[in-house]
Amino acid sequence: MSSTTLHPKDVAMDDPTSKTRDFGTSRHYEEEDELYTVHVEVRLKQQSTARVDFIKDLVMEHLMQDDTIFVPSEITGWEMESRMEQNVQRITACETSSPTNTVKIENAHLEIHVYQPIACEQDDLSTGNTKDDVIAATVTELPCIEWDTLWDSLIYDSNVKPHLLNYLYSTFILSEANVDFNLVAWNRQSYFMDRTGKTSLCKALAQKLSIRLSERYSQCRLLEINSHSLFSKWFSESGKLVQKLFLSISELADDEDVFLVVLIDEVESLTAARAGAVAGQEPSDALRVVNALLTQLDRMKQRKNVLFLATSNLVGAIDPAFKDRADIVQYIGLPPTEAIYDMLHSCLVELMAKGIVQQMNIPNRQISDTPNRAAMAGIKEWDVSSSLWALSAKCKGLSGRALRRLPVLAHARAIARGAPVTLFTAPARESATTSESSRNRIHPKQRTRSAEKWVQDMEAVVQESRVQLERLE
Image (cartoon, rainbow, N blue to C red; front, top):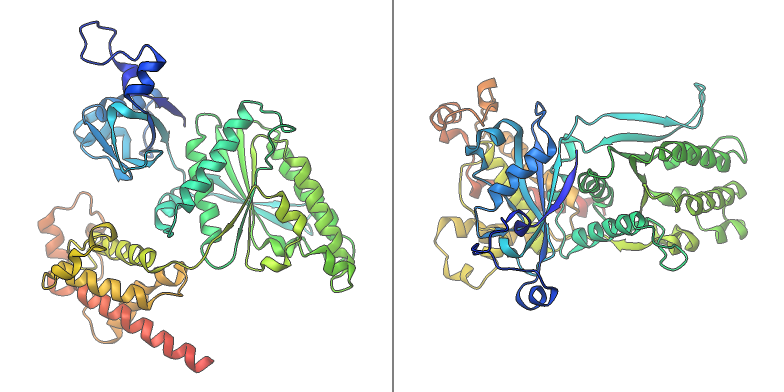
């Protein structure tokens, strides 16, 4: 699929009587308005065969009907247009360069990205052609349906996601402009270290870039390198396996219409510090692996269509020369209380949408984290929000992976304590076409858990987990 950059004024008629202001001079533009980039993602239905430029025109026309656009938000109202309803599945305003979440349409520099995700298909990449060859990497075609909500599920306490995405996007723009590497240097390598969510963030970045760069590349692939498999049982073979792997990557990159994101998970397996090898603490084969990897990374940096991402939990084990080659070294820590609230809130919203938890408009963090929270005591929705804040504070120190599991453990605990369970029938899964009355018949209120009880169950699970950890210690 492809993307384009549009501005509302580009579609205005050249009519001297038009109310649209004339931006013919740069001085007038600079004094009167500042344009802010707004990225809008348009996901097509699987059966859609519509031309991308046709969809872009329809989306642009729809956006022009409003005075402002809120970012991030899901765009609505387009379903009334039959041509869009037949082809479009979702429209989302994702990111913006504006310092505020609300952007006036007349000041919006719209970048519309149209994409059609595919089922997650994975292939193995080996180091040769015989059955004894090592499976060195897994290749995933992007954008894939299974990762389409991965980006939104990752919540941090700072602007980690837009910072990384904008940087990687910038390296692509500089590459396409043929900027001289000797004057402006970058290696297309980013390194993520410590704690939680690193691999998921790398996959989400790859998914986002495959959508952003869909205009330039016809295909995008993520190569996940199996670091442990590259150490051969035969002495001195590991360095050769690294060379063979990068030869395969180079062959894939020969097709300039394919964008490759190479993820080296647990990179410490390949980049154990050479100082340890010299001191005799590591085998000499490990030294050859580090040297081979660094050499191949230097050779690959001239490729415009290849990006390297790496993760590690053992910062001290990484060779300094590898870290020095990374354009960004990003620490990903455990989520703070505010991010935990966002995660648990999103879990409850999803369970409500699927009929597992009773519907309730629980305030999000931006609304609830205010002095008004105490003043709103006694109102059911705000009481649940206060309980969720208290639970979030108790969850501090848990990883994002553990927090996402918390509702499942709470559900299992509720079942064990005799809570009624409704098995979903086939019609119930068709929530988009099932009427409200039908859903109520399938999921009577007495068979759904209240949000208050869900929060209580999650709190009980956290307390029980703490007790178990203390016993182990």
